[in-house]
Image (cartoon, rainbow, N blue to C red; front, side, top):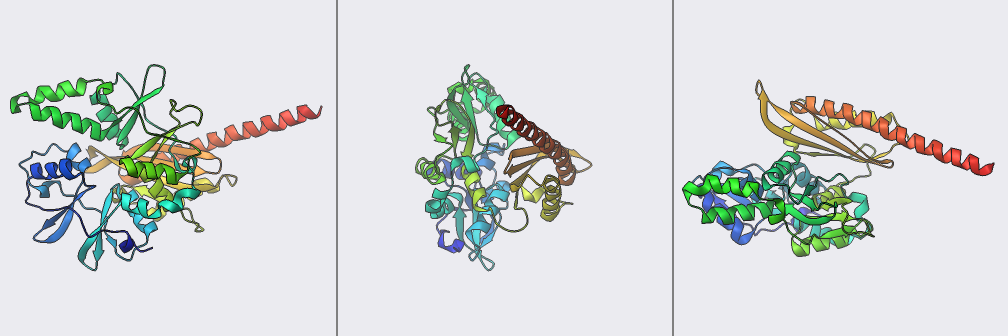
Amino acid sequence: MDIADIATREFVEVDANKRLGKVRSIFERENPKGIIVTENGEYAGVITQKQLVQSHVEDNAKAGAMTSSAPKVKRTDDVRKVARVLVEGGTKLAPVFEGDSLWGIVTEDAILEAVLENLDALTVEQIYTKDVVTVSEDTNVGQVVNLLRKNGISRLPVLDEDDQLTGMATRHDIVDVVVRDMNKATRGDRSGEIERILDLPVYDVMSSPVATADLDESVRDAVARMLEHDYAGLVVTPADDDSKVAGIVTKTDVLRALTYTEEDHMDVQITNIKLLNTISREDIRQSIEKVADKYQAMQVQHAHVRLHEHKEKLRGTPLIQCQIRLRTNKGQAAGSGEGYGAETAFNVALDKLERNVLELKGVQADEEYRGQLLRKLGEL
């Protein structure tokens, strides 16, 4: 299926000279996934809600100041390739080109709607993320904002004192509270208002009840619910207890699943691929394969590498955080590390990954030995 069958020629467009205040009002009024920015009638880039949330640019600044590049796709590209582009670009939409001309856009939701019926063969358990960052009800909003930024995520499950799921704190919830309160404040009051909001317990801004999905639920049903209610993700809970957090499943997890291949070599997803400098995708794939090949009983079904750039720099080279996650027939293995430059950060994370793979292998060996011992005891 070519992406032209899914893309739309209807999209929100603003000139690079448009005031950011006007752009913010468009997001509040129409809630688009992103806005296309043009300059002298030519495509210049995109502005996303996430960018506006994380920026401190004044409303009087021009839209061009907030414009960022988004990965371009061709009308003839297939769905799998475009899904990969969205995942690796960390974006919800991509501009679609015909030759050198902007033809339309394609969004994450449009792709999921197009493939919805084909998702019935997958279960949530096959694609969800187990490691979830959670917060307690009395965690303040400032701490939540820091956790969202540090982990590059948009939502955090909220737990009560008994570790029961009671709510969800999203970037959108926090922005809504900040914008509403800031609109009430005068310019002189803004500093105090921001501090007051950041000190609020997350309980005051979270959404409740929480939308959840069971491990054995079909991905089709989970995605249908996300699309119907405009959820970016669902908390995954055990079938017998929807108050316990087992993980989370997001639209990005589903897109990533669409990119799985059956090629001879390992399929590797890289989020924020633009941060790669002295190392290539092929270098990364070969390095991860070397780790996996040491343990023949472990078959890697999918590898995901996530890069995040910090503000700190050393002689012009940014501090990078790298997270590597492997989905294997023996379970999940992960490693993370930091370094100046993507290559250094990746090598630190790779070393940690190998140690964790060895630990996983050791645990499984202990379990196999225990099983053999019990069988022998049973024969006595």
